Length: 196
Image (cartoon, rainbow, N blue to C red; front, side, top):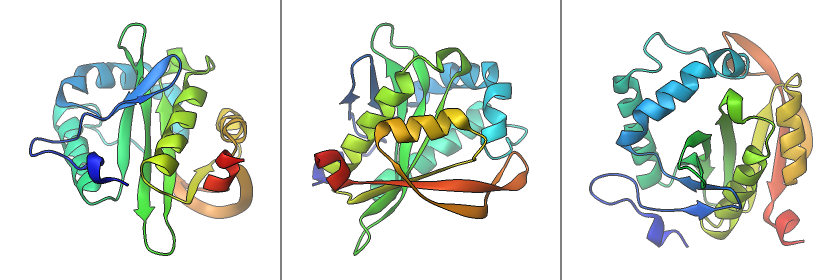
């Protein structure tokens, strides 16, 4: 199922997952400036929903470390991270990925995502999430994809429900976000949900 997804000697494979207006592709070293610029422009928009940013969060060195981690995760069948790219002008709009892939009896992964402030509420993330879920089920052979979001993140709640995720629970102090442990709503979607 995932044989074609193996990385080459120099990094991530040339995979492209198409949606209507956007496509997903693995990050490349040349993405650093566009990625850093978008993250900086969106800092206030993103930080309430993300782990605290280190001082060098947007540096080239930090991006290279992130890219190396993505390569290692891809090679180990542990995670698959993508840039969200606008088909019209090739601009990077955000990122999405399936991480914490568990095989064996689980066949599960966790969906994570972010989008630049200027691109929010335009339907791009809905397209990207649908594409990532399809990739997870059809190419990775997963049975279940999970996601978690802070209850106050109404946009994320609506996104997950629009894509077909079902709320399954509430986890107390689940993740350390924006410098403090925060409760999260737990969501999941099954392959059967999409097939239906």
